[in-house]
Image (cartoon, rainbow, N blue to C red; front, side):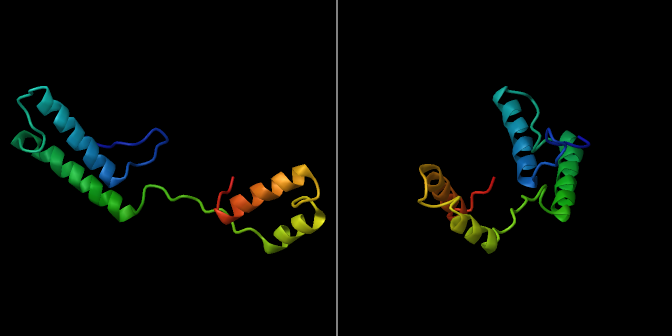
Length: 110
């Protein structure tokens, strides 16, 4: 095993690699294979490479960080309400205002 990556080219989280390794081992045990990745001396190098790769990933930090949306500008918020685009002026502005408030209060950003 030299390298393992997700579809987008991102590294797996270290916990995921451990789960994949144990999942392969569990499959082999369930199939009554004569080998056990966790115990057999033949797989010592494999176990060491996985452990080294996990240490390397942990040094790099999280595999990818979520991007944070910028904070809503208070001026824009006020302008939308004062202009009537949000609020009780029309049914559309009422629905838009309700959606705006839900997204703003519950941090749902598109």
